[in-house]
Length: 148
Image 1 (cartoon, rainbow, N blue to C red):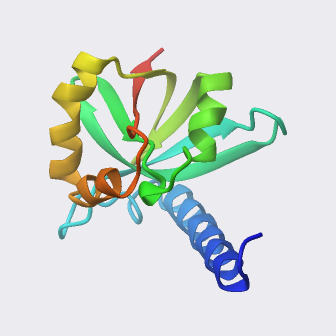
Image 2 (image 1 turned 45 degrees about the vertical axis):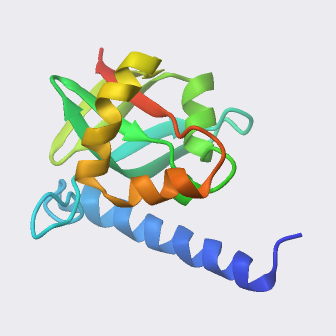
């Protein structure tokens, strides 16, 4: 069972995430998109719960790869994948918001060659990913969001 401190930390993180989403949407990405003053670029990923069917939104760092967007299922180096990763595997057709632009995308997991090429770029955008990978035994997946 999770400790009280752990539950409080995740609850606080959830409130912060909700505020980020509301602010990002209300300002059409003017606030919360990042990409300036050393902040990594952020998008809003809409996803549907694999079990619950509930619509959710997660703010995530992204990397551009041509017209595709790449997100990292790091969960801070946690031993398990983030919930949004499982949701995308069950429901890969979704939408994202990048700044003021909303686009329909299809999510797929990067193959080994793509991951080898894209991982260094992800670490360049957010150096913390390197430490997250060292912290966990799982290989952190990269998810490619292809425009539909």
